[in-house]
Length: 168
Image (cartoon, rainbow, N blue to C red; front, side):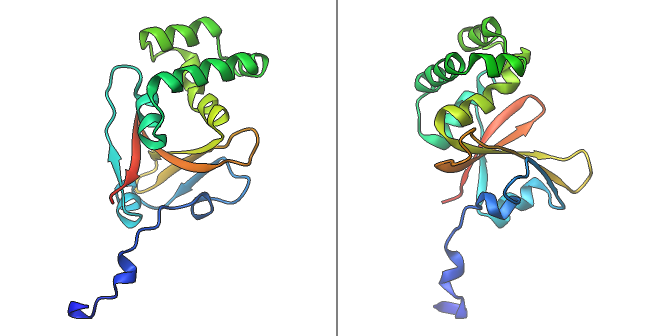
C-alpha cells in the first residue's frame, strides 16, 4: 500500500453497546465530545426534519422502517402494554395526538423511544452533549426482553433527535 499505510485500519466498526457501557448500565458519561466520538467511530449525524416527528424520522433512518410502520408499532406496543406505559406517565390521548398532529411537547413523547425499543426489539443509545464540558452522555434504552436484535444510535439536542449513521 502506498506510503506504508495498513488498509485494515480503514475498515469501519460501528461501536457496540459493550463499547459504551457494561451490561446493566442505563446511563454513562464519557470524557469525549460527541463530534470526537462520531469521528473516532466513523459515524455522522443524519439530520431529521424538525416538524415534531424527528424521533420517528431518525428511527426510520437508522432502521429502514417507514414512518407509517413505526407509528403502527408504537400504537400496537402501547395497546399491548398499556398499563405499564401508563405507569410511566404515557397518556393514550397524548400519544395519539402526537402521532396525528406532531405535537412533540407532550409528556408522553419522552417515552416514545422506549416504546420503539420494545416494539422493535432494538437497543437505542441516545447520545447527547453533557452539561459537563467536554463530556458526552449516553442513555441506553434496552427492550424489555433485554435480548435486542441490534443497537442503533440517536443524537439528541434539546428536544430534537437526529439519526447517527456510518460515514460509509
